[in-house]
Image (tube, rainbow, N blue to C red; front, side, top):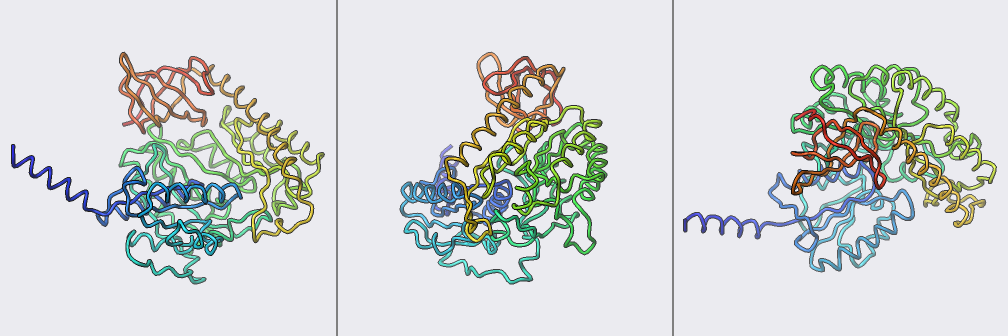
Length: 459
């Protein structure tokens, strides 16, 4: 007994002596994926991740710069972390570190800035007097970053297949933060997906900055729908009905006949799309640099998709108050969104981003007007969401990914999302985080569908 006690004591002392790190991730799914890749690399080197910043020697912040609010939130987060742990080394990486490197480096709270184009140096380890950060060469920028994961810190695992953007919307800072479009080789994607499925993940999200540009830079060019068809061939025979795919934001310009055929015949993809729509007015889209699609094309595509997906979840990114947007043009956008079978929306008032063409245009609307228009769009989308949740209660069953499970006396409960990307509250025994379960919907409470588990799906 004394030997066991001493062994446990020595083990805990050894753990205490090891260097510890804490990672804060801000922004998109791509950032979540890259943070996970860095965390796994550091763990493999023997470093220990801790849940709270107070216990770490290294604090890493993976930043976002897509809006001015994101940058403000970043600065506030850096101040909170420094206050929580004055003695730790604090390093900032990500998109804000790319375009605001000097400003962030000047903050007293920050010890080092690792720009987005040098983020891969973090894979070598968290500590040292210097990470030797240098801007990537033009050649290196066009190589898909060597991030890879075998697990994920959420029930739904992200698989990154594309990075960067070569389009250049007039409002968007992403080409400045992440560079031109680069694609991941299909074989690497399949290998990672297989690894995650074997590890027990039952919902995978195929993610990229601009999936419309996927595959153009590969030795053997293809597009995103080619990749999805290959994934279907590889995994559907074993995993259809036991696991599912979800797509991150897709471009309206890629919703063509090929997309319709690929999605309509898929046995893996959940009946849910999220569109990078931004506006429903053709003239506003043209000024945004998004004149490569007509809003009507989206309606036509969805009408065709309904034949395969009679019910679907539909989300959209929407931008209000773009420079020069008239009240009539906003009303056009609002009317178009009412025609869409929207089930939710992410609505943002326009935020000028440094280095983008639109930031210098003189006809920027007052902030109050941008915010007011965003509120009107949100109110519409919230109304549509409530109506959609009510319709889902008429379904005999929903398939829910359990994202959080709790045990209570007399039973269990869980939170998750169904195939239509609607939030659910489950009641049932032996719920396990990350599993797919069948739920019988019984009503709507607090913005969630409430129901009881009737059948466990996959292990």
